[in-house]
Image (cartoon, rainbow, N blue to C red; front, side):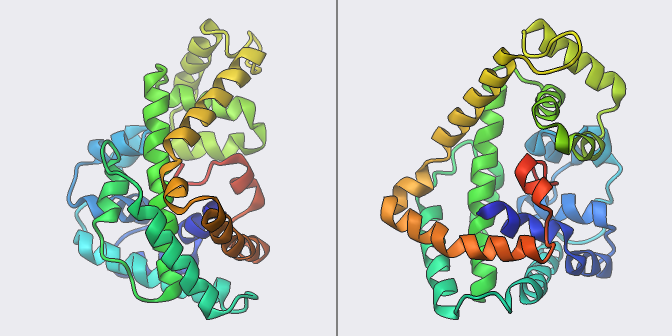
Length: 273
């Protein structure tokens, strides 16, 4: 429910336009806009928090061209413009959007910031006023919260970033090319990752995922879900179902209009994974 709504902004032409207005190319716009809530941090620090990207890729990003607040303001404008295009003809009334925003606020309030750097940085930002922007901001908070926890789980099980990318690509080959190209580790790094995964019994000698590898990846997802349960516990079952019931048609509408592809959502390899 959250992925199409949040990640659509990273593919939206409105975002590209807004970032170009402040001197950022599309690639820099993604990395800088997602990290701007942290302030002026180094590319290596951003790479560490984003986890799956090769740090060399981030060193080529245009840093320091725009003030972090200017970047956040540009992203806010992009969200308003993109959601006006994607959601204005969606079959949902303003009252339900407002309700979804209120539920997202309550869900986010149930999330503790300890060890969740990207979540904490975004949680410190002021909530917007426009109902559509509130929905995006709230959904983004929950997505960053889950992402921070996912990285913690991977690290606790000895997974290097490139290893996590490699096993993900093996399990979901339909998104392999996008995943490998966007993370920019290079064939040598991927070959070494596959060798390490084979040593652990997660891949066979042909590079295909084993039953053990699938079970391991499922365990990672279960642990990630456990660490991401706080917002849903804060809402309770009925309100969680109510929130997801409001967001589902919005997410479906974004997919229908091509705001983000079904394959990207299905494989979980959007640019912010």
